[in-house]
Length: 526
Ligand code: ZN
Image (cartoon, rainbow, N blue to C red; front, side, top):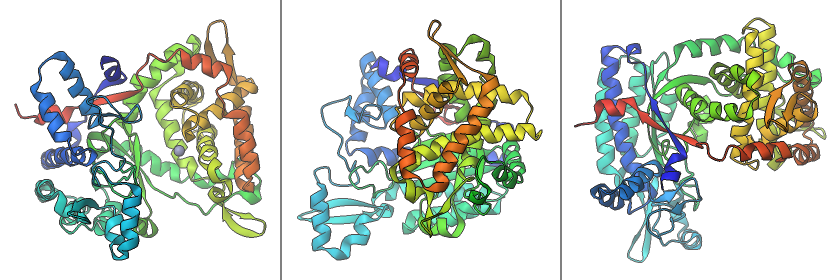
């Protein structure tokens, strides 16, 4: 159990109180208290016996039970999210439908019910209902009824916070979201969230992602992110938007394949996380999120990408830098920096929006995504990483960033390859970085020394190699070349000998972080 807990490096997450005026500090406290209730709802959503298990663990004072309680808190239940949800307390396996459905229900029973009761379909498949048995029948209970007591508490905190909020757009979000908890209709408040303007406090609270429901991916889990906007980073991003046409023009791609109409598909906001709750906090920590999920809202207003800068910094310090210390040639270790890591991450996100999107294939309109099918996410993640470096390099040439960033970004990315690949190369990001590593190694832009077991960047070769790799990937996308994508992945998305060898050196390192929120310490009642 201690080994399991050690997989998570404990990291304090603090925030800069001085950014807030007195009224905003009050708002912050109320949003924190609302979010604490979200933790309780989500705990219930995961497993019907969770409260009972937690209460009994709390009463036991021996070391063994304390460790169990600790891991239970990280996982929001007795199931190990890092090990296929295997139980670490008791023998019960986690129901696929978590606590959104009766624990003994099968897919077939649910589907048969809908065949026999077609009028139930909308309510039963809604993201915002819980399915229960009533005698022989199945019934759908709206979240607004099922979690009534907790939602009443949250509503009170949100309306209280709205009283102290001077920013009209935030006030509107708080009020409409509070109303949604009674009506079970989140549409208007999702629109209000997209309309947040000039707000220092950025908050999202409610039921969003559906991954906890592994039975059907229908039911949304409650979560919350309480954050403060990073005004400096946000201003920089606005500054970068002006360079987008030049960035597109500079791509190593035939002019006819360039697209200048994509714009920025989802605006990026950089924030400092103050507190997260529920689904957002369980197991592996989120670095960024893109919401809302309601397609009607996305059609009308797009979506918004929120990046948690201090969580990136925490993961850099606790996970990436220790990896760099093991794998990087000591001469390049000083070039592994958080600044380079975060700038590349931002440029990765921006780069998703440049290059081919809609394309022409055999005379009719299509999309890169459709043509590349199951290879798309691996090629696209790889492209975003490569263009992240390629475009930063361009902006360095233009004088937007200092030239010192160049070596830092290349070295930092190389160290980061090993962090991604640890999660497996079947997943899109892991595959993408494996492609880059193997390609650049082949071109002599990365150098592996089998004597010292260290890697380094060859700065004389890396620029050209990144250019060539970008050209390969962009051409596959522009042509909608499915076979080309398959071949490229087969050749390069592999655990090559040096990748395998170096990953084996890392098995003792933590795989994620466990945030300890300063605000929680501040307001925990004695
Ligand atoms: Zn990406």
